[in-house]
Image: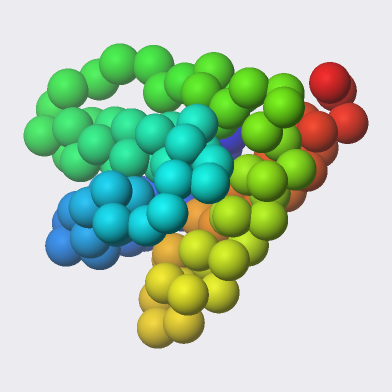
Length: 106
């Protein structure tokens, strides 16, 4: 989670808001992942405002049966939205690695 938190910290507020909004505008093939991504963006925006609470890992929102589709969706989102932002790319690289590792646990 430390890589995800560090990547989120490097993303501008406008990009975080854009990512959170984009989760509602895409096909809901991996709803747990999209819900987690929106929550992660909100967590970072709230952290910047001084609201400190524990960030939940993706496994809290992504059920085991969505593991494979979530990895694929994270890669597709990364390829679509991270073209112009190294910080967004770092977020999705860390997320894909975490999800792929989590897949082996189930």
